[in-house]
Amino acid sequence: MKLSWRTVLLWALPALVIGFFLWQGSFAATPMSMSRNTASTRMTYGRFLEYLETDRVVSVDLYDGGRTAIVEAVDPELDNRLQRLRVDLPGNSPEVVSKLRDAGISFDSHPARNDGAIWGLLGNLIFPILLIGGLFFLFRRSGNVPGGPGQAMNFGKSRARFQMEAKTGVMFDDVAGIEEAKEELQEVVTFLKKPERFTAVGARIPKGVLLVGPPGTGKTLLAKAIAGEAGVPFFSISGSEFVEMFVGVGASRVRDLFKKAKENAPCIIFIDEIDAVGRQRGAGIGGGNDEREQTLNQLLTEMDGFEGNTGIIVIAATNRPDVLDAALLRPGRFDRQITVDVPDIKGRLDVLKVHSRNKKLAPEISLEAIARRTPGFSGADLANLLNEAAILTARRRKEAITMLEIDDAVDRVIAGMEGTPLVDSKSKRLIAYHEIGHAIVGTLLKEHDPVQKVTLVPRGQARGLTWFTPNEEQSLISRAQILARITGALGGRAAEEVVFGDAEVTTGAGNDLQQVSNMARQMVTRFGMSDLGPLSLEGQSSEVFLGRDLMVRSEYSEEISARIDAQVRSIVEHCYDMARAYIRDNRTVIDRLVDLLIERETIDGEEFRRIVAEYTDIPEKEQYVPQI
Ligand code: ADP
Ligand code: ZN
Image 1: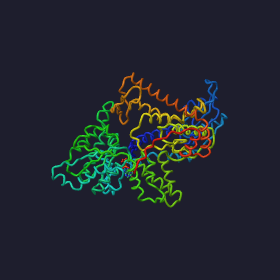
Image 2: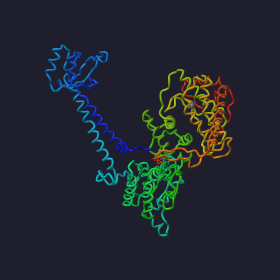
Image 3: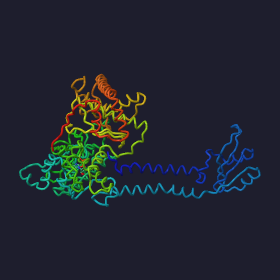
Image 4: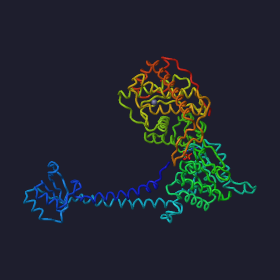
């Protein structure tokens, strides 16, 4: 969920106003010049005179030109304890001074401090300035619509913040790796360019297309390419921007968007993250989100309202089509669904080709090799990868991107920024054992992906990392493969425990354990891979929306739930026993590998396997190597 600036400001302004009054209040309570010397208790002037006469006053400090005094006095009722009291004196009272002198009480007078006054002035000014600045900013932002500055102060009617691009400049050539989607959408371009061809034979031109796929796969890019190819304007807005805190704003935005679009037809309207508005109505606890429903209803009304042939095509994107309200998917609305998936190896190669067009690559670089190394990368990841490599190249003052930069960039895209390695210490040793634990279990299990490298160079959150070469064919995973992954993920903790003992295990395995429980639970509840039998225990609609959050509602009885837990535990325990056994049985080679890793920080997969093979047999792994 993106937090827009204006949302932040809308919340921040009331807070500022309240803060202003609170601050003012706190200053009013104490004279500015005394703010460092405050006595908490007040005493009346009359009482003060009484104290003076009964010789209880020890010392007096005068402030504010003699209008306020801080009095130190003893109180016989409180064991003669010394008290500091504040007294407001009636104006500039010289008789007090003479009284003090007569009584022989030590007193002093303090001038008002100037810097205090300046700070006070600033303090008094700063909130109004912030307030005015904030309001100014707010109005400027809301004026950011194609309509121009005339709408700046127009609160109720329209504060639409959709973007319009007259020319996107994106062509189908810029989109790669999603050929089927491109082909299907080719037709939409023809609808926009030559509608007569369809209307002449009585065909109804579709109004809405739903692009379904994970983030970064190029859905926005595709929509822009359609507009670019057809040479029509591109209007875009994100579903999350519709969902505002004021009821009615979202709906008025939708109305406005369609109004502008009609004025500019033929055109494309692109709604990103439509699931933010388009969730099933009435699905939330307590009747759902009124605002969202109003917005959704308005969207449906607008889509029904224009004739099929006005030349507006609405393209929406989501990665959760299952949560969308059925009304959205009815004929005449988003009745076309096009899947945009992460690219396969061939697709990745094509995306890499597109994004390397404007980059200098060293001749030895093989885009095929990069495509091979990056299963699961989306188009956006690949674009990001090449960009990171280019940045690294510039930073290293090289002429062209080499494989070295590519490798570093892949690591960075997957695991975040590189940190500085630890100095040799007990905890470095423990991390080394942890990583070698993952790597050795992964190497010795036939069904586990092979080790690509082990490193102690921290990246992102991780303090050390073991990289595996993932198999290209990831869509079907066998039970043995999942068990191997669980065991491999437990290898780190197992090594910590076997080598350092139960008491020394660390929090470093937290992430591993989370993955382990996820995998084990899914084996039981989704894939029917446990003793509970081939049952799917998780319905599609097991989520209840709580405003914008969601909560998982279990659909099974407590008894089943207890049995699921027992199954999950037994799977994990079994795998953990295996992992520990692998560590114990291979202690000699593990110790050697740990020493090597601490010395060198990184061991690559080839060398790792060569060393392990000196001690024990490594099973042959079946890696599916795709052809390009
Ligand atoms: P989505 O809308 O699916 O989240 P975007 O279209 O915003 O993804 O993709 C972000 C960026 O990633 C694009 O601007 C483009 O540079 C790159 N990209 C993503 N998919 C592709 C693709 N299939 N071909 C070329 N570039 C892509
Ligand atoms: Zn780990």
